Image (tube, rainbow, N blue to C red; front, side, top):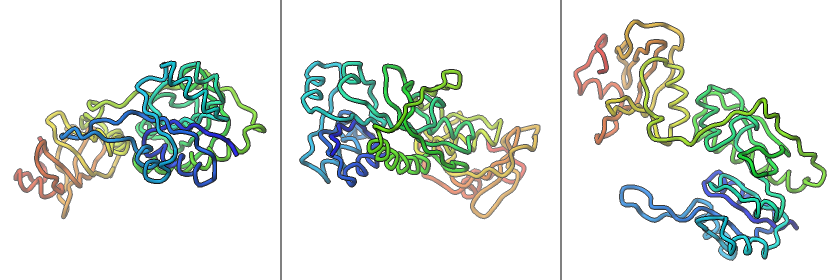
Length: 304
């Protein structure tokens, strides 16, 4: 039986942790991010992994250190004597002192060396990739630069970030079990630095759109569906839309091209979108047609 310290925070990590418990790996401890104030009322909320473990395996100790550089934390990890440290979207960089304790295996949600960094799923969708995947990586001191142990590819075309997160989480769970069971026979493969790309942490302002390119707006909508969403500079949010045409050129963007029962077609400089759900700042969500009716906008008018 392999003794595992698990480090992870969101639901992606929970899916992997659950699989390890189901497959009878001995989870020595969970390390996760400290509880965070969430929402307008700033309610202190534990991480998804912490909630899962507290409810399903309360005997397993949970650590929520603010820093992994604390000598007491490093000694705690050493004292647990793990065979492996499994890391999945933990949200903290592991210092060398911890990397040296046991093999540290990261479940990264891309096919490295593509999309090293904080937002591999959103970045793959933004770029319109039709294929993505997950890999197990033997961690080193760099940012997602370690040798690849195993990987799985999958189709992500027309899937939004929530769907891709769920898909990759389940693939990562199966892959993690495979890598741990077969670790001694796997030959790590060094990443090709010439193929490396990086992705940044998503910010609220990344959701801002202009009506230039329908295809790019559609990919942004898929990537940012849960957060930060997509919105025009006047604060108008597009909550549900479809890509109708990605190549037709228009002299002016933002024209209402056609009215439908619960939606409308909108021109971009290149391409056409179907706007199905829309929301103004501080107001309720409306279907596209109801919104236009309220603004007394008709076919041929401009959205703003």
